[in-house]
Image 1 (cartoon, rainbow, N blue to C red):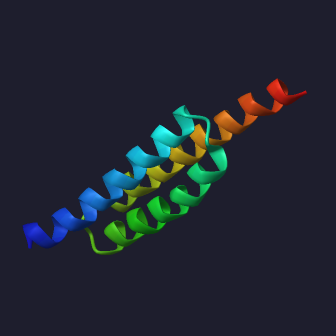
Image 2 (cartoon, one colour):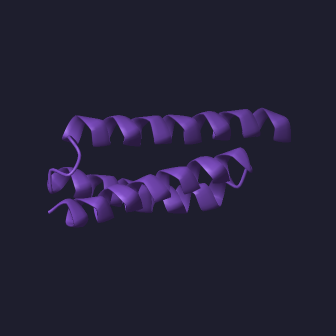
Length: 79
């Protein structure tokens, strides 16, 4: 069971790291695409009780907040 769970945890962690890296590199459109995969993976892990549903929701919220903050910071710079 641990090995099966590890797959979901690791892939969720990988997607979250990838989104954060893309946000840092200011590649927001690409980050949004990867964020969808991160969302999907976190939801699946929560559904299978690999991570607590609240934990998954918190990670998703923080990810979206970071993406929104990066978008807001980008907008005034273009004007």
